[in-house]
Length: 187
Image 1 (cartoon, rainbow, N blue to C red):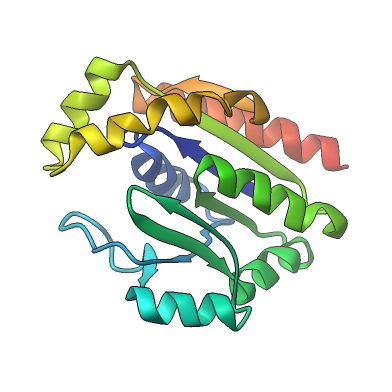
Image 2: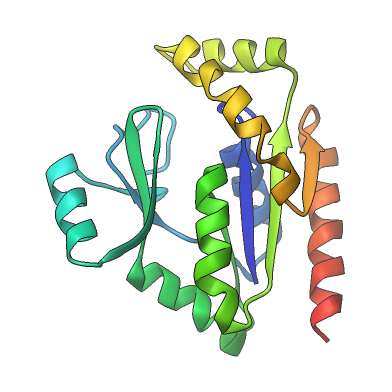
């Protein structure tokens, strides 16, 4: 199974993913490539950080098969990472990944012929809470982050579930319940 977590910048995607992975030993992070700079509070294993020239070369060579520009940076899934997801059922692994709203559409399209179960979740929080979180993490361009909210809201209907992430434990419990529900549909 692939679990896609999407949501507004500052909605807590990485916090939720990290907590889910701590609590679930068969859940693995699906690494992707990005041209953005690493944040100070970020695990170095969260992304493969590339310069734009290298990213473009990989895209041109077909090594990156899905990508999206978000906040003036590029994010993409490599063919190798996607192959890991395709083989995950054999090993009883689940993968989790934060992607943008267009990435969610692309991943579902790319995986539809592989019989991979995909659970997609969109995290929301009220705008005032988003602003507070972005300020607390030292985000330099809050207006840029907020400008994407309206665009992303147009895609919420494509997701299996929308969760308001105001309490981490409640959000985790809701997602774990959704995962169990999706796992039982597979049997």
